Length: 376
Ligand SMILES: Nc1ncnc2c1ncn2[C@@H]1O[C@H](COP(=O)(O)OP(=O)(O)OP(=O)(O)O)[C@@H](O)[C@H]1O
Ligand SMILES: [Mg+2]
Image 1 (cartoon, protein in one colour):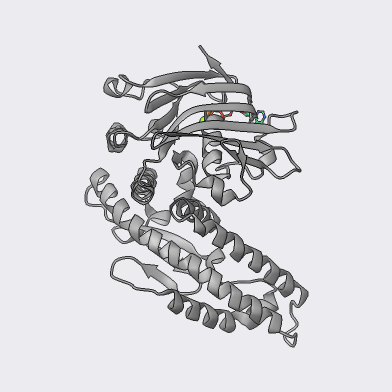
Image 2: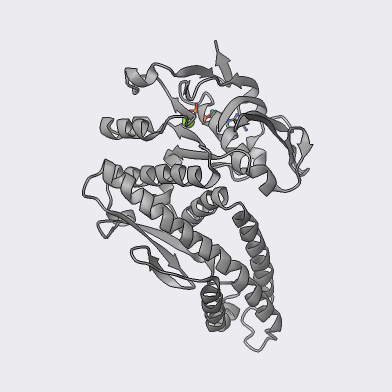
């Protein structure tokens, strides 16, 4: 998969930008605060309809303007597709593929696949459980497109349940028949989410462990899924959870927690409360890993993600690397650049070209960005 061009109108600090990419290796060079990350963000947004750093879509619009447009042309199996997004609040955002409107986000998001690695991704280890769930949700929906619909549905029911719990908060004699209906619906929908997360993490752990061993010899990377429904699950042996098993455990857990939920007025168990832990040689990375080790874990997971998506979609996602080379020592930098297979379009941002070895710079296409404009 290849991004051939991008056009931005009123996107962040870009009033009008038009770029054509002709190489697999692209470098965006510019001083701090010129718009390098903004440009990568617009591509990431096109793949997922979600920004990896904005809380709301209106943040993406150039200050003082009322809309923004991102238009990209991608090439997938020799077929060109034009993807267009118009954000114009409070209207619903407009999505078009080859000029045809799409109403469902999931239909739009299947077009462009991106794996992105930035300093922000270190939140995978250093952040709060919410950050890790966001990562899981984003990564899994790239591989199983139906996943995001399930998350949306689960959250919709959960919000209804929460509203009801707030109404009856503290009233242990309240009629709970409506709560039982919500719990049954959540058990069915939520267990699907858990099942896909387990499947994803199992595959990722295998690949990430291999990548990690190549960069950091003798350091074994493992993962566990910390479920508020099924407990802590590691991926060392064969575990064969079925959807029915999880639905059953889900229903049991929600009945067990029912009284506590009424007293607290909120839903306290389910995939929206689950977390993931990472270990190096059995020791929890969040608490004990050094900065370099943490980066290496995230890097291994990104490379694993790239490989997994490649297998699932039978195509190579575009790789975005935002300022991460400067953060890695030479050995890890070279490993990263070499580990990116051929035919992987890679767009890298950096303040200069000093970090790249000559071999890599040979067939690279370089764009200089300054104050939201291309410098020719
Ligand atoms: N909605 C917006 N409208 C106008 N300008 C914005 C908007 N959002 C962000 N900016 C500005 O865009 C500028 C460039 O940001 P960006 O993060 O892309 O820089 P960068 O080139 O990646 O810099 P660095 O090398 O420091 O990472 C910032 O100075 C920021 O103030
Ligand atoms: Mg930046």
